[in-house]
Amino acid sequence: MRHVLACKNHTGATRGHNHIMNVLAQLARNKGYLVRVNHKVSTTAAASNQQGDVELVNFGLDGYINLVIDMSIGCDHIGNSTVNNGHLNGKMHTNDYLQSRAGVKNDWYKNEYVAVGTAFAPAIVSVAGQTHP
Image (cartoon, helix red, strand yellow):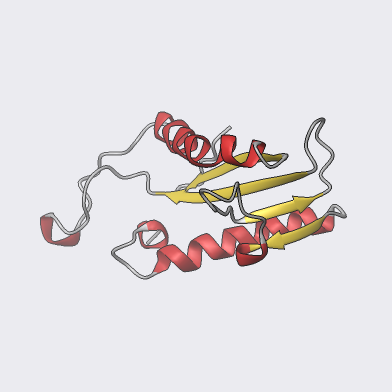
């Protein structure tokens, strides 16, 4: 059941992503931050015009004004669910795949946001409840 929350071949990926994005935004609001979500998040430098998922306005990190977070949900299973009549093969990723996904997010966003004075952090979770440290 958890696989369907992250699998782009099933319809849950966007809903799962948006749900976690909204929970993250609400947690920040509960701590008193002004929060922008989704298409209201500031974009990166004009040339790339990339956009994260959640922005905490006036976050207070030295050298930065805001903090942008881009989140991703990963599936812990290795392989394709369309093989073997839709049954997963039972093989699971280890925690290093979360680190790898975070590295991709950092490569994609971090320097672009630093160029406009905004800090960036990836938020990577797995459908089994693992989180990127």
